[in-house]
Image 1 (cartoon, rainbow, N blue to C red):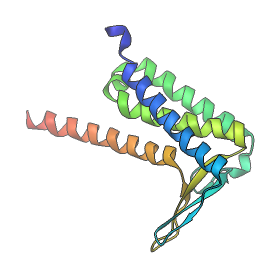
Image 2 (cartoon, one colour):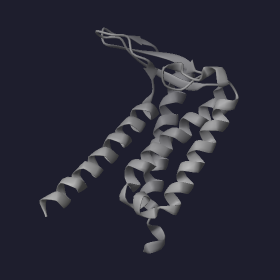
Image 3 (tube, rainbow, N blue to C red):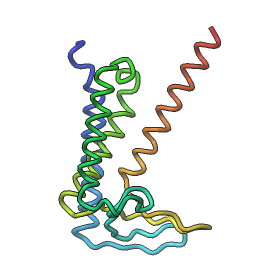
Length: 153
C-alpha cells in the first residue's frame, strides 16, 4: 500500500482538473452570460496571473508556470513528509494550476468567468483559482491544527 500514497493527490488533481475544464468548456461553447447584482458570469481570457499581473511576459508566462509547478513538485518529492502531510490540498492546487496552464496553450490565456462586483470590483476568476485558494487555506489549517495539537500534549 506504500506505493499508492500518491493516490489521494492524483484523485484531487484529476477531479479539480476535469471539473475546471468542464466548466470552462461550458462557457466557451455556450457563450452563456449572466448579469447579477453581486456577481456576473462573463467569459474573459486572462493573459496574466492574478489581477492580470505579469501579462507582459506573454508566451513566456506559461513556460515559467510549468517550471514553477515542476520545481515545487520536485521539492515536495524530495521532502515527502511535507507532501504526505498535505496530499489532498496539494492535489487540488496542482490540478487547478495545471488546468490554468493548459488554458494558456489552448486559448492563449486563462479562461475566467466569475466577476464579483458587489461593494467593490474584484478580479475576474474561475473555479481553478478558487480551488487554489481553498487548497492553501486547508494547508494553513492543517499546519495550525498540528501546532495546537502538539502544544496541548
